[in-house]
Length: 201
Image (cartoon, rainbow, N blue to C red):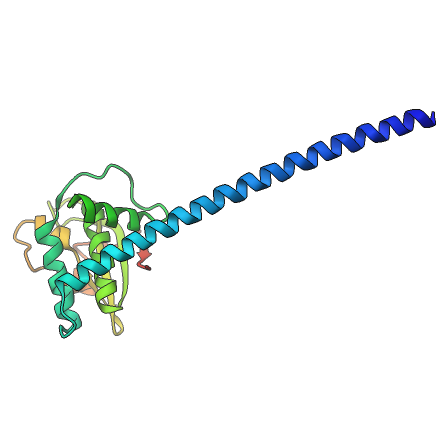
């Protein structure tokens, strides 16, 4: 009887050790994947920051006022980027960084790309609180459609900068640069169910 108990104890001990080793291996794998993911994210953030800094330094002067910087960068985005249909959906975590970098590299993109690209440039150049909005607009055809634009907070007021709308909507040139948010409610569906992403880099 004692011999059987000893054998059972050894069997249980072996199984416990095997289970413990398996758990340790699984935890190591999870930690490695997490480390690789974090490293990749850090690398892409650095690349984006470098690109944004390069564009800002090239397109604006230190002596420019913040409004002048915003306008120069707005004009830069309008003139240098073309329209291209999105290949992925916007709105997931970190989408704004991915879309901005795609725009800088490919020189074309959707309204989401236009908004993301301009948002990072505006934030870098001015230090203002900047956010990208995803909602709806009737500014193109009179009918509501999905759209993305940029909002900046200056003092206590929010202003809209929408390079995509300004470039492609009929007779819109100059109408969507630094306009008070409160005065564009009708154009942006009264901002119903808008999702915001604050720009951080």
